[in-house]
Image (cartoon, rainbow, N blue to C red; front, side, top):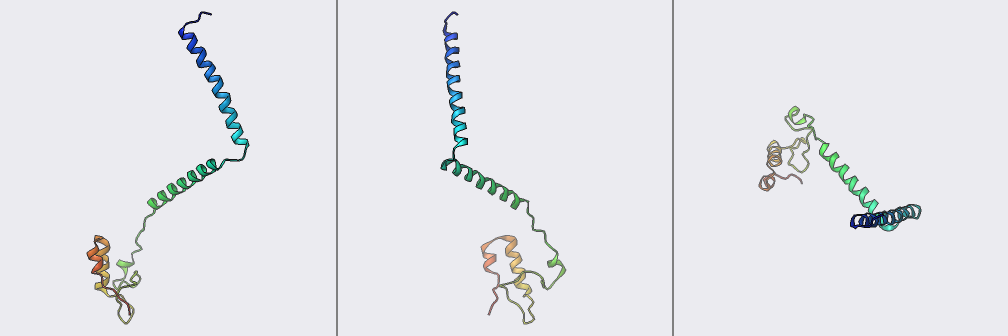
Amino acid sequence: MKIDRRNLLQSLAAVAVSQAFPLRAATHAASRSAAPHASNRADEAYRIRVEAARCQREAIRAMRNAPNGDEDRYATRLASYSKGLPHASNGLVDAAAYAALLKACKSGRFADFAAVPIGGS
């Protein structure tokens, strides 16, 4: 066999590969048969938490809060959330206060929320 640069490099590469793979395979087999190391457990726990967070994010994105039609059905806002707003003696929410709350929710502006009347004793 003629020894030239190409043959030398191919031989060196073959030796390097034959040395690297058995070592890596033996190391991998030993790590699988032995008890898991703390760093491997930590990595796996981290991966599980990240995947759970992704699933939850996707579930939240998929959720839609569909209105049940109560605001259109009941002009007095009888079945609508009105805790913290002023109410009449018969228990119905003050219509102007509820309208102010709806306006604030639509605009999202602090000034509109500050203008919502507060009920209570």
